[in-house]
Amino acid sequence: MRKIITLAFAALALFAMPVWAQTSSTTSNTVALVVVPGLSCTVDRGIDYGTHRRTDNGGIVFTDATNYAQWTCVTDPGNSANFTFTLPTVLRNGGNPTIPLTFGSSSAFVSANGMRFDPHSGLAADFVSNGTAVITLGQPSQAPGNSDLVQADLRQGVTGTYTATVVLNVTLNP
Image (cartoon, rainbow, N blue to C red; front, side, top):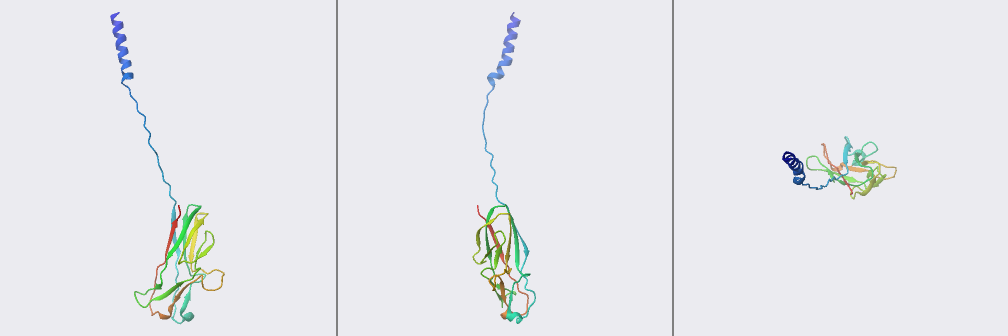
């Protein structure tokens, strides 16, 4: 009998101890993720006036249907974008003299909504429904006049190669 009681106490101690010694704890933690819109712009073409004499076209050359600047920007469909430019005022040949550049008041165009705009002031909150916008500068439209064009005035230039840089700035609205 003593053996049975001892075995019973031993079994009780063996199986009851883990139950009495167990504790538990429950905690929670957050999982977070921020998704930002994608935006990638590439240069498709630049303005290249080619080779001219100061007397060609009365000393003034313009962009045309085959010579204009173009960029393609890809973003998430449905984003709203702002388009602005940093525009040079002259073409430079290492210093002086310079060749003045004039950007027409409607010489910028964005394909997302078919909007022409003044590159000096930019275009705000343009809806890019399909996610792709082609931006041009100096591409003529069907409208008469030179307001869609970029003009270089060669009359004061001297022999040499002249360059300038146009910067397209694209930002997405939250």
